[in-house]
Image (tube, rainbow, N blue to C red):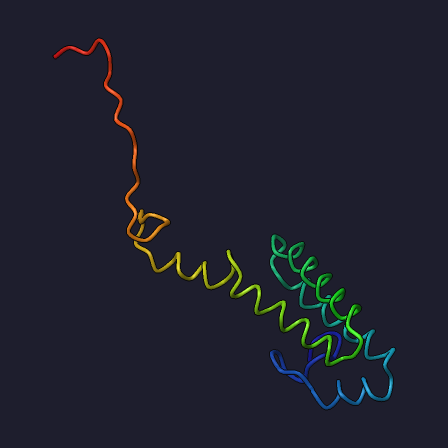
Length: 123
């Protein structure tokens, strides 16, 4: 078990426990949720922690703006899909990896440059 008793084994979540807590003790559930989030972020490499905290802030804002738990789920799901399919998202990043090294950003487009003759060069 982890230090906050979040999961019975590493990588597993005790769903029944979390569901019971959410139903019976919403304040306790929220405290447990925040502890679990902090535990995961603190285990990430230091150079990723600021970005993860920013992402969690955005998720919390989406939850706050939603009128219902289902609405929060839909908003967060939409946010995740946008990070995959929006310009500069995961799909674009994967497409960049498919191109051979040195390939142009525009498929089939050759880089163009004007050739400028050097003055005073010996012929």
